[in-house]
Length: 114
Image 1: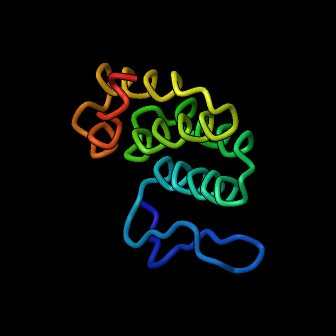
Image 2 (image 1 turned 90 degrees about the vertical axis):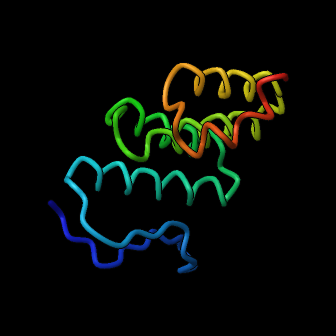
């Protein structure tokens, strides 16, 4: 286990973008850090880079606690760069197949009828 009393991922201006407190395994900690990098890129509107970081979480840690959030934000990043609303329907469909019990699946429900 890795003890992370408080870990912040911030941008170059020092603004907090992602926070964690508590214990994580090394794999979960790596996923957390990747999510933080994705969030920094997302907030800078660097959607292609954000999508890459979220995809890395899913490729390297598909069973991570952070994977459902990565699915959600990968889709939102893709949509934000392309404005293709069908991407959001695909995200919602992914949640019907995997991570159904996550809060992120609930957030994607409105996209099911896209």
